[in-house]
Length: 75
Image (cartoon, rainbow, N blue to C red; front, side, top):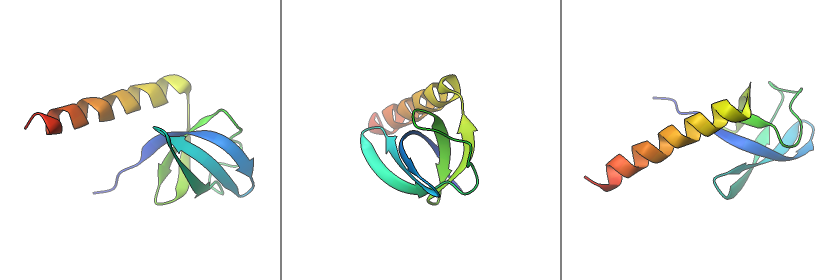
């Protein structure tokens, strides 16, 4: 199973970017999404940004992850 998660772009130094994922920062490769700027959201997988997301899409996806983790914690 492959998992991709949304993150907010904090800094861009092409082809790299620093992103924030729920308080943790990562360095990712942005070769697949060169149009992304600081403040944008991207979907990341295996160290690459694979899709540019709207803030609403990112928020909705992060909310789904929170709901998933809440269900796991109650089992």
